[in-house]
Length: 296
Ligand SMILES: Nc1ncnc2c1ncn2[C@@H]1O[C@H](COP(=O)(O)OP(=O)(O)OP(=O)(O)O)[C@@H](O)[C@H]1O
Image 1 (tube, helix red, strand yellow):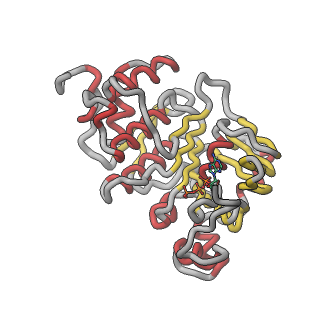
Image 2 (cartoon, rainbow, N blue to C red):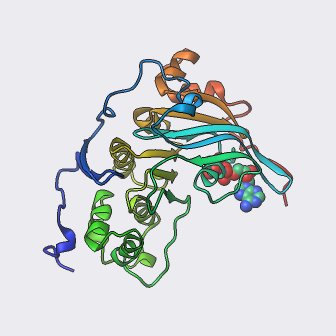
């Protein structure tokens, strides 16, 4: 493939501008750090609890519980994903964030509670980046994305746009089994947004990425949300979460310990940063992973 390949159209040299397709087919352009359209209500600390009649809610989980066999992981967790918002799940290792995301994405059947998709009827309602994305070996990055694109009526050029957006355009011809861990994650993020699903669920999208790409990935998440998509992600990078998220849920020991806008949480706890809010909220030692259940 050469640089004048038609699949490389719309390649941007300015990484502050991110052109994206909305779930309804229109195109918008986002900018580094831009506020969501229309801004946010002054006090939306409990937005996620008030989603019942909100037409912008795309995904609503009510009173979820989940257990792996006898091992209870989540208890009475409610979360809404709202169009235009980045909702971030934070919390200690092993507290159930991935489990919750998988329930939201329809991969895990909750043991109690409901998950309701309330978005438009589209071929791909929910895009999902797993914590450890992997792709079938033997194909190039572009071939892989083009395959996923073909499933939802998009073409190779669209696949290339998704790839360019995550900064991986130059790896289009690289085999997926010859990518670094970080590059594989970026392909996974591109894959999750194919078809412009109304809900995009990203499990640790910035994990393992270099200090230049981590903020970029959060900018992509912000830009995707600004198209009217409901983005739900997990991350341990609390500075990036604080900068990017509209709504934060702090999961601790399988229950929601804090929820609200980052500024609402820090104000409520009378601290300056989300990191400080985390340290004030998490019950138990911060330097040890609490392992739920019996060890094998
Ligand atoms: N397939 C499984 N079978 C049994 N237990 C599991 C399984 N998957 C995860 N767990 C357990 O469920 C708990 C929650 O795991 P989960 O991956 O959801 O946590 P997390 O908050 O995403 O952690 P991290 O931040 O480390 O990614 C952990 O105690 C984990 O050991």
